[in-house]
Amino acid sequence: MKLAPSILASDFSRLGEELNAIAGADWAHVDVMDGQFVPNISFGLPILAAARAASSLFMDVHLMIDRPERYLKDFADAGADGLTVHVESTPHIHRATQQIRELGKKVGVTLNPGTPLETLQPLLNDVDLILIMSVNPGFGGQKFIPHSLERIRTVRRWLDEAGSAAELQVDGGVGPTNARAAVNAGASNLVAGSAVFGGDGAQAGLERLREALK
Image 1: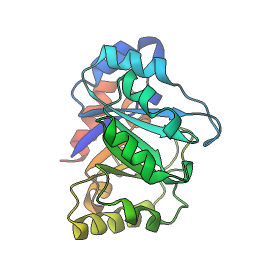
Image 2: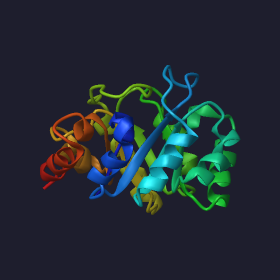
Image 3: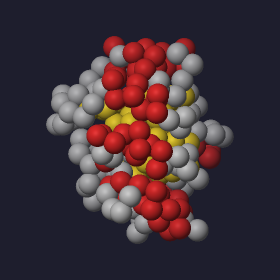
C-alpha cells in the first residue's frame, strides 16, 4: 500500500517544509489543472520543479489538461517520475502512453467518474498505474463518491485477470474514514490532500491515515 499526499492541499508559501513533513509518505501527488479540461487552474512546471528540488519523493504527476501529449516532455524534464493522463483528454491515448514510456517515466491513465470503465480495458497491459477518480476532478476537498468502490472492485478484477502488475490508485475525498474500504475494494495506492494537509500538520495527517489502514 502506497500513500501519495496531494500537494494541491499544501501551503505553497512553505512548500519545502510541507514536503519535508510528508517525507514518510511513498509518493507526492502533483495535480496539474489547465482551466479547460477541468474548471480550475492549479499550477504547472515551476511548482513541479520546485517540489522536485525540495524532495526525493516519487513525483506522481496527474495531468488534468487538454491534449497532454503537448507537454509530456516538459513535465518529465521538470521532475516527474510518473505521468497520468485522462482518456477523455486526447483522441490519441495510446500515443500519449507510448510517449510517456519513451520518456522513461511510469505510465498512468485515469478517467472521470462518469466515464465508462470499459475505456480502460485496451490499456490494462500498457500502463503502470490506473487511477480511479472518486470525485469529479477540478477541486480539492470534495466528498468521496460511494459508487467509486464498485469501480475499484471492477478494475481490480480486470487487472488480476489480465495478470497486470499496475498500481490501482484512488484519488478524491480519501481520508481515515474510507481509506480501509478503498483498500478492501482493491486499491494499492491512495491519494489524499485535505486529509493530510488540512488539519494539525501534514505529518500528523499522514500518521492518522496510516493508522486507519492498520
